[in-house]
Length: 314
Image (cartoon, one colour):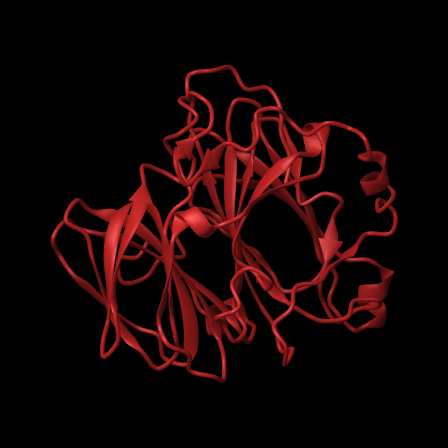
């Protein structure tokens, strides 16, 4: 089964993207991306999964049956602003609606505990710059342990890689092979901006690498060796193995939503670098980060959209 789910193709029932644990061939992670027609409500049942509701474009209302209703202030696009979000627990029903229309990501993880619904304001989401130089990227840590503790298994971040930069580098893994402390399934949901640097478009592209090593053979995991071209709305599944780099083509900013979950009893996020390239991290000591980042904040873009971009990272 291919790890690459190009657009269009993965969506069902009119959705932009539909990834279920069953369809992915694993146990925990899922993702739906739904397009809301102005004024037309959409009912969603979480079943055995907890979810984050994250506007990709536009704003929406999330009405959780028997609980609260949240008005999420969204954004023009993922390259324009950090957005509000909502958490909804398993065994829940909620209704999405948007007067002006919206595209909304629903990231999910099969879990055991049912937790109450909760609102996440954009102003409280921390932004981190990882790496340095042409390996600098912006990581929006809205749904990670230590920042958002109100979840059972689900972990999510957004990453923006400026044009020409590398992210998810050095390549890393979080699977059942040595010496990883835990195993995590992961989804990469890509958005690529067009020439205006803000509006997603299939014109631009990025590159994604996934592969395995001798330690995966020793763990009985089938070999992976994929070099992928990714475009707007494409999905890449990471059941195990090293993943990275993710490279943004010059001229085209790259975004991805990471959805992660695993069998650990305590929600945690850990990784192991490919030992061949792990030394690269220490080479960044004292090197400046890309001055184009951070690109976005809760207030909007930190720089004008009309500019010439030449490099980036994650």
